[in-house]
Image (tube, rainbow, N blue to C red; front, top):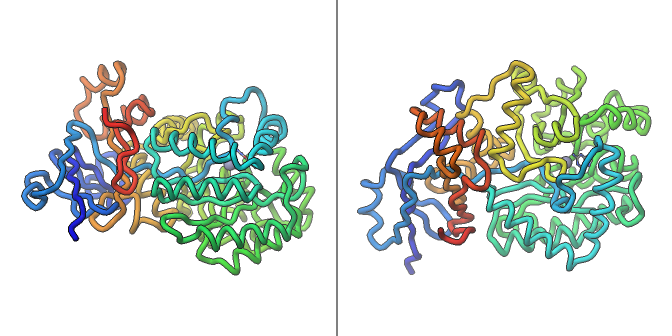
Length: 434
Ligand code: GUN
Ligand code: ZN
């Protein structure tokens, strides 16, 4: 049986390595009149339209010119139960959690509410060009079930996990070391490696897990080396001080996770802002991945992520929205704010590296670059279509743009969901055709 083929035509941009500077043309392939041949959720071929069109005689051709076709964006840290927390005024981390976030997450005990929010959450991701995300669900097993069910319904490569938290939160948000372990085992069995779903073992952070729960989390990591591990690290000074009180034996914040066996190259550590030299050494040795969350770090007044400092140690940093402390679902706006965070430290984020970061770079951080993050033949057909003239301000500025780098910088500075002309997940359009 021959399956239905689609030929997407547009300006094709795909990265092969991390660009080392604004003019590093060796790190990417850009085909001005390009095409992608897609079937069964996979990219069969990438090339010039003139080369591919004759090979795809029966294919439906969708002409996206003059838009750019790029790999779908990857968001490596955000919170599914915080869709109604985003844009909550006035607090820094611990107060924000207690006043806004925890009361909202309690509502996800209800499967109906959770399913309704999952629909909105996935709509928001794809309308902003995101095709893979790594999410925290709430403590309730049902929230992870609705998350993975919705991901499977849309055939999206999504990573997530129910949070483990057994103290310092309201009654309705607490599990126990044993129930957290049992629920996680059940969820891994049900969803990890099923379709495109992948599981992340998710102790929320040191403050909300007892040593007993950290021990159980360590057992889960040992028993499931195929899964990711995600948590938060050194986001805020009060958080760091409270953690030191709760874990007096730990050498530093990261040592809490390290001493329970959680620190591996599969670990994603949200924020990682205020780090000690020993913690940086340990991240470099273990190849764990710090996650830069610029809109969140500015919104909560948490601090400035030292991207260049960590990179100089050979550490691979991921980048993410951190919804709902983050203020935009857009990875373009995440780059916009990331650029400013680095400017404040006299560091530079040039647009080629920026777009590599939210596509192939985050895929590399997840060890998934053979599946997502590029437009290479044989990878999954997660594709975003970018309109560099989506708004009057962008259109006006584009009249002075002469290079691809300039166009990309306009997209990352002025673009948001309005610049997403279409998003394909496993080859399927997620937005109604314009
Ligand atoms: N640390 C622990 N939980 C959270 C959360 O939900 N958001 C952020 N930004 N930091 C956290
Ligand atoms: Zn977070």
